Image (cartoon, rainbow, N blue to C red; front, side, top):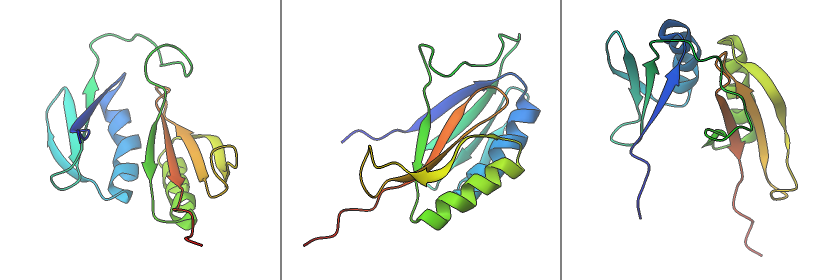
Length: 134
C-alpha cells in the first residue's frame, strides 16, 4: 500500500506560518526538521514529513471550496485529544471553523474539529474509533 511520504504547503509568510504550524505539529508528535530561508519541515519519525514553503509573491489566502486543497485530517486517539489539539491550534493563532463536536453523518462515533490558519489552510482533528465487536 502506498503511504503519503511528505506534504508541501505554500504559505504567504514563512515566519507566521511556522508560528502557527509548529505548536500544532509538535502537539501531534512531529519534530522540527531541516529548514532554510524558503522552507521549514517537521517529521514524525521515519513517517510523513510536512514542509512549509515561502512564496515569493503574495497570491492572497487560499479559499476553502475552490479547486485544490480542501483540508488535511489528523486521526487522534480520543475525543479529549481532539479538544486538546483544537485548543493548541487556537492558542497558536488558528481560527476555529467548527468547534469539536460529533458528526453522525460520517459515523455514529465520529468526533472532530476544524481550524484554519491565516492563509486559509484548513486542518481537522478527528477521532473515529472502530465499531465495538458485538
